[in-house]
Image (tube, rainbow over all chains, first blue to last red; front, side):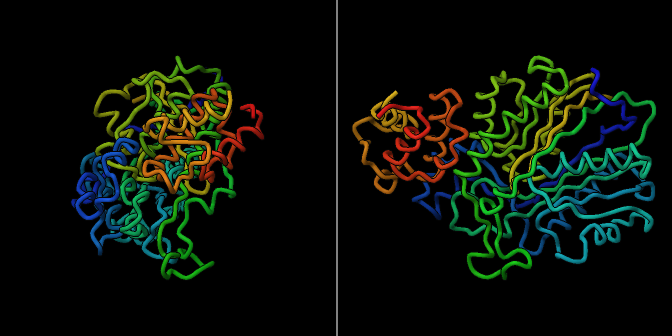
Length: 331
Length: 80
């Protein structure tokens, strides 16, 4: 394993929070009889999506997730060194939502914290940032918190987006630990702004106002799918090659849980055995940046991730932005 | 592979009988050819053409059988 680096970083604490309100996708047929919902579910593989309350933001979801995380793992908030908050639906463009979270949770005022505006690649890419910060001894530990409320951008009449995106928050803690046996491969990334118009909320920044159609999430499913089909199998093969690995060496592939169609396509193009491709999107939906940490959490619970397992993580989507790594799981 | 074969691939992707689709069919005329149906077409074409279709980005915007065939012809993946 010449390309792994012994990071002395452990990554064993994961948890997530889902809003209490959810919709069974089947029920969309009641208000939208022309949506052919059974066909939708057949393609997306998503049966249930979670929706934040009207007055509940990604910061609120994050706070719920962090509080239950700190309690579950008996982590003292005063021990936290860094906070990376991954979201594309922050409370405000400014100030940084990480500042708000710091104050509400009671994290030290001496920490490094900032928002990362990434979607489906958000967890893997922020993992790269956190690993770098700890490896460089800038931080001793770092909370990565992903939280998303795409529901606030979705038009209720848009079948494409309404039936797949789900709100959630997920937390993990990276900790410097000289005794841990976690190993990380070098991270690899991709960035292609030609994809920007294909998954966008046009009014969500300084370019346009948040009015009318520009306040809605727009997704050109065909173009996003073509990007995924074209780039991600190449990326996965490249990640394997650069790490002297083959599919046989990987115990579990955790891809961004975009949709059943996407996971089926990737599995087919990469010739991946079905038991090596983790899927949990049916009961959770596409939770954007939360999808990989939620999948990791569920995979740990299902004992599909265990000490010594070799796991590939690949996040890809909005931007377009993508990233991946291989982790030899430790304790 | 020729245009007739492409028509059959598209029909299979949309899970409709072959006789419901012809070379001149447009997505507006076929109920099953909505945005999700189009994704199924893209996936089926990529599978049947053994991965050679994933680089043809213009397929994402194709709205008719003839348009799809023109793209595949230009890419020399089918014969006229």
